[in-house]
Amino acid sequence: MIHFVGAGSGGADLITVRGARLLGEADCIIYAGSLVNPEVLQYKKEGCKVFDSAGMTLEEVLAVMEENEKAGKDTVRLHTGDPSIYGAIREQMDELDRMGLPYDVTPGVSSFCGAAAALKAEYTLPEVSQSVIITRMAGRTPVPEGEALRKMASHGCTMVLFLSTGLLEDVERELLAGGAYTAETPAAIVYKATWPDEKVFRCTVGTLAKTAKENHITKTALITVGGFLGNTYERSKLYDPTFTHGCREASR
Ligand code: SAH
Image 1 (cartoon, rainbow, N blue to C red):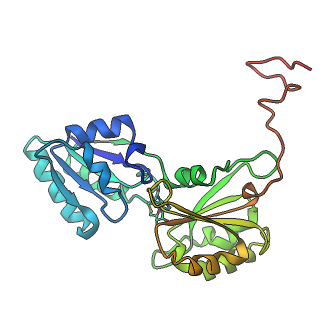
Image 2 (image 1 turned 90 degrees about the horizontal axis):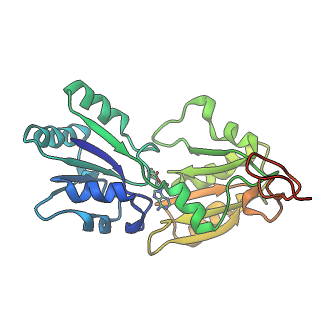
Image 3 (image 1 turned 135 degrees about the vertical axis):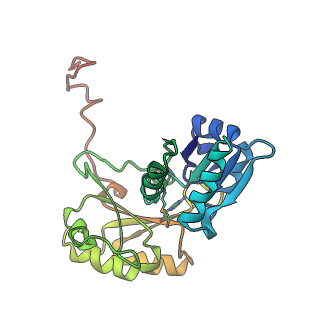
């Protein structure tokens, strides 16, 4: 069996209980060494083979999986954060389907959740934003035209940008071109969320590039943008004493 497992955003104890169990049972682990905290490998059993996929092609990864499967061994394909976000798992699963090899998926804590924890923030504040856009700046990997950053930025909701830290001048320009944010809209750069060397830089849309430059942040960071980083919001209805819902009558 082949198990795709989300390693979580960094901290080795953020992997799920199921993920850690699968690591402990695996005969072979193929992990994304560029981003997965190697400390997570502490859960592996003795004799488990370990491959770092950072220097491997899709074909090489599949060849290792196939060889293990033929030998009746268990493989864990360990992805950073949650595998469904920029994880390139679909192309692996489609090939495994074609080869007739069985697999399953165990989710993980995505770095966008790790970043919210680092910021001690809530992305969906009442009367501020009830939506989170997860996207990236177009770079060497293109983004479909309908999802151009300036279009996504026209909503003014909470945004989390992956894979964009090297393009922050472009990010600033596109965020402002959307028309909903201003140069003063709060923003934050979260570097290595939930890792021991996590760093948080609070800034504004207009100072994103400068802040990253001053602090030498070029990768492994998320850019978060929006009023959720500010101080104005409404109380939730759920815990409002004057609001009745399925589990509680209004008390005043
Ligand atoms: N599947 C992963 C994302 C992989 S894409 C997830 O769910 O988090 C890789 C990008 O994710 C990096 O370029 C960076 O933008 C972001 N990233 C991954 N881990 C991070 C972390 N701990 N802190 C901040 N950003 C992170």
